[in-house]
Length: 239
Ligand SMILES: [Zn+2]
Image 1 (cartoon, rainbow, N blue to C red):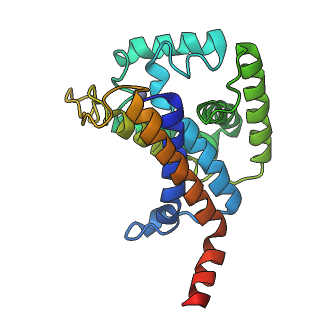
Image 2: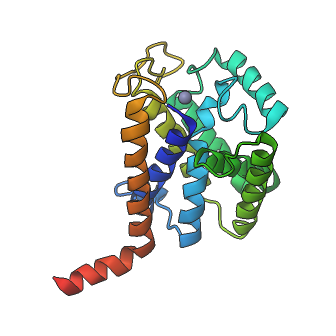
């Protein structure tokens, strides 16, 4: 799947998961109450994290987002993880990334803010911010927008960050599992899970069905989240 599809699916998954994170059912010890700022910030972070597993692709969106640095990083990760769609496309990677994000956000704030800047930059790039014709212009626009958003988040409590990052990675893996090549979901076990619902990356199904549906889902969920209480009380007043 393409970067924008992954980023959109991350945003949709976060907005859909917010009620579950706030009311964790039997796992009440893990429930986190989220403010409006945390929900909005989580949407961008989860969108960025939903691009993260492709850090193993030498010519993917991540490799091309931060120039020579990201290209070098992606090459190294690809070598270490066994190539594209190997170790980084697994549940273990998602849990590790989520745990790592939580640990940095709660113990090493400065490193976390750098990582947050990169994640937000990725999320924005995936969602289409800064996709101009000139690469340098794209990079500058993306960095400025990411810096602005990270500054806006500077007083947002980040106890939710691990959830957003882990969820983003899981959604990416789930998306890639819908293609014939699939993913080694239970890595280091070698089996691959692949259901060929999307026959070709950036093919007609992805462009004309999946992306519009995800966009519609993101809009509906964003409106529901933003106006949740008002909509509920309005419906109750009509009942
Ligand atoms: Zn992938």
